Image (cartoon, rainbow, N blue to C red):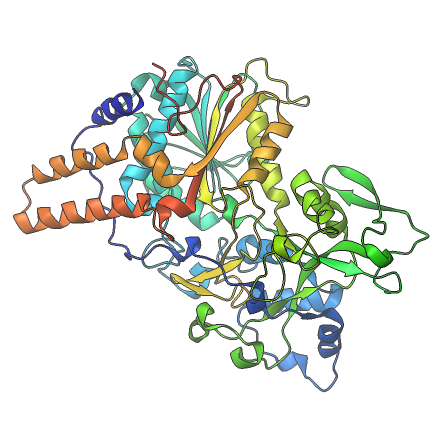
Amino acid sequence: MTRLAVTRALRSVPRATILSRPQLPRTPSFRNRAPPSLANYTRRNLSTTARRLSDKDEDEDERKWSTPLAKQLAEAITATGPVPLASFMRMCLTGDIGGYYTGAIEKSEQNRDQFGAAGDFVTSPEISQVFGELCGLWYVTEWLAQGRPSKGVELIEVGPGRGTLMDDMLRTIQNFPEMAKSIDAVYMVEASPQLRIAQKNLLCREDAAMSESKVGYHSHCKYGNIPIVWTETIKSIPYDPEKTPFIMAHEFFDALPIHAFQLVEVHPSSSDSAPASSPVAKITTTSGPKTFKKPSSDTPGGSTLEWRELLVSPTPPFSTHSSLRTPTSQNPHLTPPPDFQLTLSPSPTRHSLYLPDLSPRYRAIKSSSASSSSSTTSQLPDGTSRGGGPGSLIEISPDTYLFATDFATRIGGSPSHPKAQPRGAALILDYGPGDGSVPVNSLRGIRKHHLVSPFAEPGLTDLSADVDFSAIAEAAVNASEGVEVHGPVEQGWLLEGMGGRERVESLVRAGLQTKKGDEEKEKFVEDLRRSWERLVDRGPNGMGRVYKALAIVPENDGRRRPVGFGGDVVM
């Protein structure tokens, strides 16, 4: 039923709708490769770093930083001390001065952007038009299943890149006129001014006017003259209980900043441990002040297990790749020596007191550590451990919780934003563990399709980390009683189940009927099929296996599963 219905829907797309995609490297993008271990980040003791920073024998004024952003970050760290990894990532990716997505590449390397064969990485929509068509069709099936609303539909994409995915989705939806007419607006959540212009030129044509308001920037789509609104944050999009939001997040969560923590054993005599006279700690969080009990003795001998944060500090002046032991896997010949490194905080931070207490999954790692044995602990190359016990590592992205909460609230409502009838859906495609495990050691730097140190050339190097799908699911169901979560499933499973292979063969038949020469036709067919196989490749590093899909839909007590997640098309 599913395959037949979806295939029929795909066949309704005009056969002549064949888009040309540039030839791309055959190897998978390095954004979905295994990251280097923490040993490659050259962690040092904070006190040693601080002494070197204040060493009068070194003339810091003469130090040559790799980018203007690196200099700004170093000056800030020198003044205030090492910063959380999340703060470093946020500045590198979206900082006002030379952020990766906010102007650094355009200013330093003209005529090059982040995407495609000439950029730093390749995303699925750039590989094949079929990917975006299937995503658009997925929302069509949700629209059908939710009663075919005649108005109030919102298409929302976070991190829309160059707009290729939204363009393919909108073109596909036009083949379903009733749904196309139901779309009130398209929202593009984009922080980069340069990418906003690229999206506008693709979705609205280059000569289309763009106006500005308090909400964001406005224009009209070339497909049905649908209003398009660009906002810098999803919070700028109004909550409306009468709307049906269809939300797309493709390779978005992997770019959200993460905090990294290591579990350490603190002895009572250690000056790093919390004073016994202070049984509680008070910190300020995004949801207001929080009070926490400080850890009590939980290991034999009276020692305490505490989470300590891994912070970012500058490398010593005149460092080289050799002195920093940059591994060959990070291609040191492609970048200058890293400007920064990870260091372990000698005492608790406000993040280490609060974030590891967010989820039962994180608390379980610590609580099981006191009784953990060598048989339950997996050693990593740097000597730290993946399982319970001192040395255990976790990565937590607070922004992941915030966005998942926002998605769920828009779809299912919440006490602060009540919604009489849940409606809408979110489709999230990204890479990360799909087995419920917490990501560790996953921070990676990407430069021109190669892995590099994430601390080299800040602003010119893309940063990403594995997505914690279980954290997304947990945040969504906790935020709204009106939603349920399905997945994650492998990308290859989703695309095959959506009838993608049939769509590829349809495009092949259409291409063979063109007036092109035989050699050109043969190359077209080969490229089309190779691109599809790349999307669904289930090899060890294949995109079809590494990338996962997760769906947030209105709660229905599990009676209806979305298409691609084991469900049928509801006509």
